[in-house]
Image 1: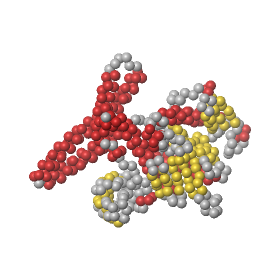
Image 2: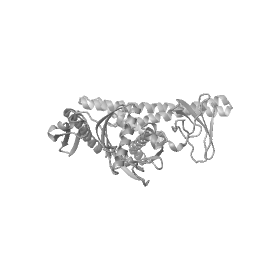
Image 3: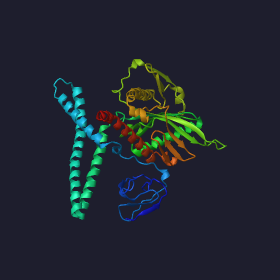
Image 4: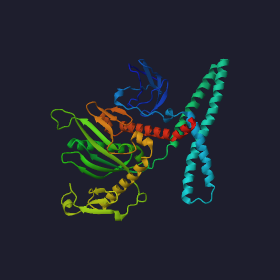
Length: 452
């Protein structure tokens, strides 16, 4: 395989595919390249040294573009967790599994409790099986280390090389299983598998804020197409001079809630408006709210708590908007939440849309009460989905996007607003950081018990 060499005078060298996807950083490490569907080997990496990389197929090289344009992909969760702590957690899980299986033997359980316990047994059994695999592999590692010493003593280099390769493979497999265990440890989030209602509202900045809101709305719509999701505008209000005042998007597909739940908050833009003649940079904001779309069974709305009003719709539509009262406004009296829909020409369809938005808002209120109990969500501030929280800054003068929660900075705003790989990389980092904090929170009682 041909090699690409690049002199570097930086303390940290990183490897990218020709599309700019960050691969890995460690010395002598082979990693998959998601863009070219091959593997990339890092031959040598050091501060102020020479970096050599090669795709592991003939006559193919890796281009190393300017690293300032790209975001790094997340490292594995298991790197932040002590394996001894995981083994201690295994003992806790095994005991909990035995207790649950004992409880299942009781005949006095109702159907609902039996279902809950069976689901818990399935989850705990999966974790126990993974730990048993780790124990088996650890015995193999101990045996291979003994063989390594024997072959080194006898001078059998060929067998020594084979033993070292097997040892490396076993340790890598153990690390992969630890990652699977951490995935199992994280409790399921009901938001992850649900459809979402994504609301965008222009904030401070007047016309420039509305133009920026339109840019962000297009970014999310492009992201939905890139992920293969469905995106349906439920309600939106445009400005006379361009841009969006307010919009509501219904988004459905696989893991929609999982990938979008951390996008709530204030997005800030720093750029020179098109109407600014003196070239001054203005700061404008817009707010994003992401709410799961529950079913009618999950949220029961009492019709007696609703006050519905109809009015004539505004906007384009000819004489129809002036003659019929197709717009629907609904007030939920216990909470004071007001929703409105005027997108459709039919009053019944607008009423249905308004009720869907209302259910999503009520469901979101209930989820926020539950999420406030998790310290990990409060620390990272990605679970509260509060509009008052500044989460991201788009600085056009420096051509950068900064997420303030991790933090992470990505350059090339134009590519980021396309709603594809750069945006997805940032979201993946948020997911990984959140997962890591939840894992540490789950393991904290085990660590406290061990210190005693």
